[in-house]
Image (cartoon, rainbow, N blue to C red; front, side, top):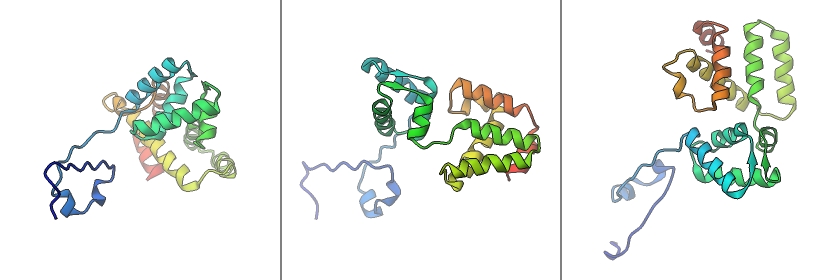
Amino acid sequence: EEPPQHVIFILATTEKHKILPTILSRCQIYDFERMTVANTINHLKMVAEKEGIQYEEQALAVIAEKADGGMRDALSIFDQAASFCMGNITYQKVIEDLNVLDSDNYFRLVDLALENKVAEMMVTLDGILSRGFDGGNMIQGLAQHVRNVMMAKDPQTLPLLETSDDQKAKFQAQAQKAPTPFYIRRWN
């Protein structure tokens, strides 16, 4: 049955592929892009300043990355962090509350691989897993880290990294420690 002409249905979803083709064919489609990490951080800074909340920029970067381009998710995480941190959002508290593995662990693992210190790598991995981090998520994070290191090797791809300037500098420093084939062979 056709609805009356004055009726308008609005479907908002991030999973357009789940809508039946018969329904989708009757829709006007407007695709929205995800927010960049930089734009999300800037918006969170504005909210923090307006609300009088202290923050560490690295903490906002973690929140923005965890939100994966969704401003609603970023604001929700930010609100939780502000509550947990009593109005002073710190990097350490955010990674604890969100159960995010500190990026320094990935830098350490890659450095140990570069130095061929297998035993120390295994001890570090065991420490990560014993703290309750999922092995699959840790491997995904490590793969993302190695991708970022390879992106940081080339000035053309460096701007594609959606992370803070401090993190970009760390990735660049680690990228200079070994040739690209090392990263490709080790993590393939």
